[in-house]
Length: 316
Image 1: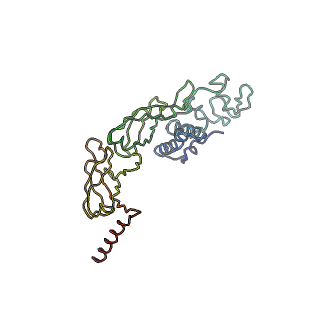
Image 2: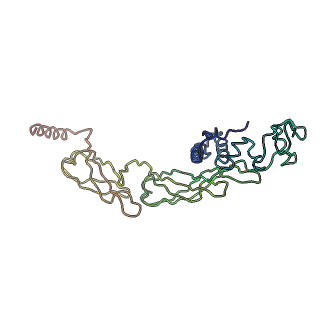
Image 3: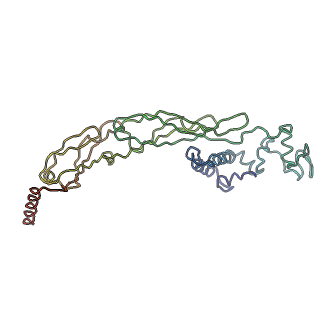
């Protein structure tokens, strides 16, 4: 049974060119074999969508399709200058004419054109599927340490490239391998464009590859705008009296002095100790204080803490 190209794209027959293109792009992304590797039906659906767009996206082909339906290609071979058979006035006879060469049981319409174009061999050569070049998007997660220095990644991925043969344009799964340079200090979520490494279309051109760089979650550091934040455990005695605290950074460990009376949750900025910035410079690191209390106290420690508690009660 012939496909209804309008139904395939999910658009009304009166849809304009913009609606046709929008519907195709939305469905092509949804059913692209590269993002539906576990769905065996996706590639077939993708081909149907591309075939429908090849016709409805071309004004001349669409006119023929709207007039002759599934027989639009045969009409195209004749320049669209024939009438409905059996109704009279056609180029091969009047009303009731029998065009069934070879005694076949098919419709007169199909049989006469099969004879005309192939000498009875069945089928004629034509392009029945067409594809546009498509961009491909891949996401890579890069550890903060490598964001800080810059790095490289080799991406291996599949596309459904269009390949033109003598008879038609078909979709062929193609494995591609591309080395991508991740620049130092690239922002989280930034896209890198690699020209011509996307999916190839029927015109021989290929779309682009877009690599989305994501900062991989870190067990210690948390991104905070253009800076980093790290939680630092500080004994309650050091927080109360002030003193030196060791702060881990992406590159090493530094020592910072905190003032007496430092509160839990308080942050201190360490200038230039964050992650490198794209284009130069280094972001800041914020040390957020987490005050720790010993779980077990010696008798002497307990006595001293009790004395402190008594003094605090008197002050209150």
